[in-house]
Image (tube, rainbow, N blue to C red):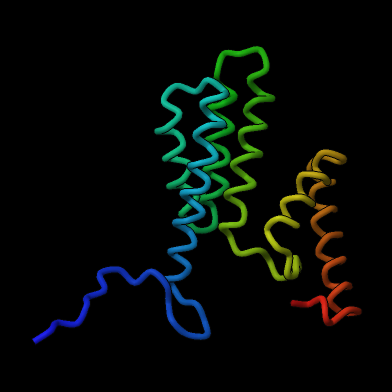
Length: 159
């Protein structure tokens, strides 16, 4: 008799609606991406044991709701505590890099519309460079409104 192959871990749900297994797989991938970005950023900042700190950032990113925020805060604090002349600036840059990887791990609110990750990231970076936090939020809202208007008036561009 031949035995049926056993599935030890359900990685992706099959069907029309993704379930808990798909969400867990996506969170794990975002956590790995955040750790992969945090490691060189923290190493360049001069953080001791940057690989352990990056693993902690990645594990925090996997947690729902506050996990990505805690990971970004950990990266920023560790980079800012390094005794270098430009440590706060380097810590802010490291936190920004980790944010670009960790923020999409959360489900965006409905008012943001169907923004892709590159569009949302570009809007936040460009808006933040022009107007700080308020500029980043304004750019995100403007990008969302632009995508919604484009899809409303050009239905063929929806796909």
